[in-house]
Length: 336
Image (cartoon, rainbow, N blue to C red; front, side, top):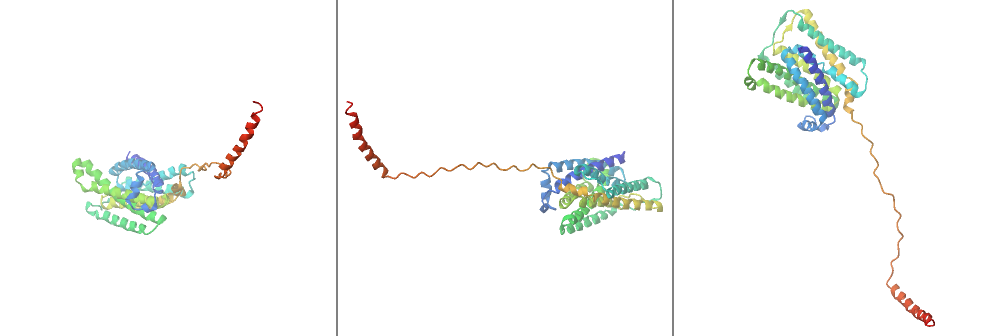
């Protein structure tokens, strides 16, 4: 049941990411790492729909993370990339290449290998402790360095570096989610409101969303999404082992299986996310009607210039009338 919930969460998250990237890529590049980017996106219906779909997926992923070890939940949630690829096919009308199919197979194989390593009973060791939260601070410091490096670059490099930072922050958020769910399950709500992991979770989620939207704004989806999808499970798995005490299988066979699963997962993520159809989403626009010519009135013929009558014309006309008057009376007298 928990595995099915994690897969549904991955599907909704992948669909939400595609819708968000389509909108964020159209925002001005000057909004990179500015809060104005978020305020601008809040006016776009497509972006709001993507956020709503992703929020639903995130709510389901909270359940999965709270009831599954991070070393198991993170690979399942990474399949969101496969669902994003499936959604991009009808949106772009492009075919899937062999490299994307190979990437999808490797990604699913990595998830399967890590799942098997969790289900097989073998010797294990727990090295994690709540005293090791400094590991999350180290991940946050690396994310900050990546953001500064991305600020100095442009295009695909900026999108990739900022995406890596967003993935690391989301990995920290996953670990905080696990702790917050555990606190809510074993303590009253008032205890949750006064505990630091809940507020740290809100802060990490907001920062992660801000960095993710900035990476979507900086470049195409196949530049940012591989970094996000690869960095998040790596950071989450490491924090699950170091901080939350997830069991590490130490038998030789299980170590090989876990290592192979992680490598296959990362390679599969990179191959799938580099699909050209994901970059085509950046330039996908709705068709626009051609502009109609502005109507103009036909040229009307101009009237000829009529010369103005001068003042001397009036006396001459009066003189002509006076001369005609006697002739008219002379013709009228014989009749009388």
